[in-house]
Length: 569
Image 1: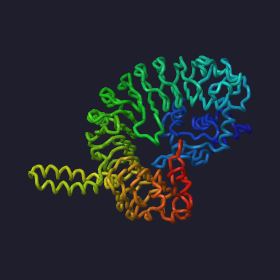
Image 2: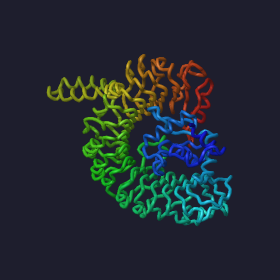
Image 3: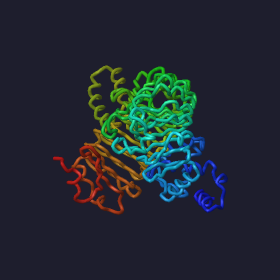
Image 4: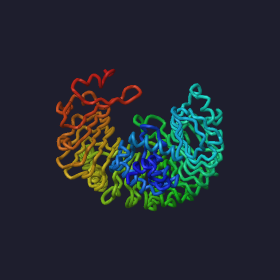
């Protein structure tokens, strides 16, 4: 039976309330916590369901969301590279129905500008925008879950009735003792402090807040499972967290500047505690590297997602030793100490067997040998790898070979050996990556320093998304017929020396949905063939340029060059 039909039968009196309130229906009703038209993250929802004890298996949560998608209760907004749902929106009529029944059944109270006073005690409260309901300590004494979305920080806009919840200026959101609270999720609230004495808390999210440090009382939250401080200003994990044996997820990081404009600006956290005893950890992002942390990692055998910052070359052996023990790892994100530091990940003979997503931010001597079949990577991001290209190296080879004839034979052999290894890097970069059977998304940011990229027939059989960014010496690309047969989106970004549209692009355009040229030169714009302008049979072509304070995307069309480059000379 359709869940919505069950709810309607309750309304008509043909079905008892207890009969329909199974976990799956409660999961559906739970989605009404989000404001209208919200873009909702699947991972966030899954963590909330788990914290509430409704659907603790994250894999089953994914299946349930796909079922809602099939029923058209939710609508896809974004998907991951592997095609799985990433974010969604609730269908308008479904949201109205579940919000109404959540309130009628006493599952959730939503406060917004249309709220009315209620005498009922509240167990779950979703504060959306300005609060215009009178909620006192008695009504909130049994509160189990609190969500705050976009509460105004302007004191002039705060009404008298808001003050009952917002409290005083020192601790504006928590004037009451929410001792039964299990879930606390705040989105951009007007505060710098965090609540105290929440000893039953399982889920704590202060994402997008201006909080700068985790209060000492965190050590008393013995039931805490999820700690989400993404995009806050926290940079240290206090020693007390080492005693939270039930914690599963620790997500703490922010960016100093616009990530589209800067590199190596992801700020993680320094762990002041030993994390080796947190045996239930499944996600840990982004922890600063040191010898102690890298040694602790080998004890965290349940990790599925790991992000590490400030890695140095000398950390390579200890890092790889721990990675060998992480059999369940699905996502690995490594950041070198700075753009000149080498990421040494060559001590691995093979990747963790479950690894699907790999992000390497830093210089590489060469492409690691273990990035090769039969590994099942679906997404690879290489940033700042600075791998040399075969054409450039061949030119150097000729010059060096001439000089070598005048040197001792053993010196010549040594040089030739080095050059042979270097010349293999294009093979490593394209031919090897092109053989990966499950790869669907590839991003190369300052990862390749050659002058030419040649995509051969049969390479990248499942690739859907390709992004080439800041390949500073790239002058030409070629695409053979039969390469990248599944490609849907191609982005070429900030490759200022690229002289022409990739040759052979006609081989992929019948399937291509989007072709984007991102911050390219005026000259490059002018050489885009006319058949790509205003054509219904070609992919959508966009030209994106940086204008003061924002990126501006303009659909490619005849006569739009002046608009795209307005203000440039």
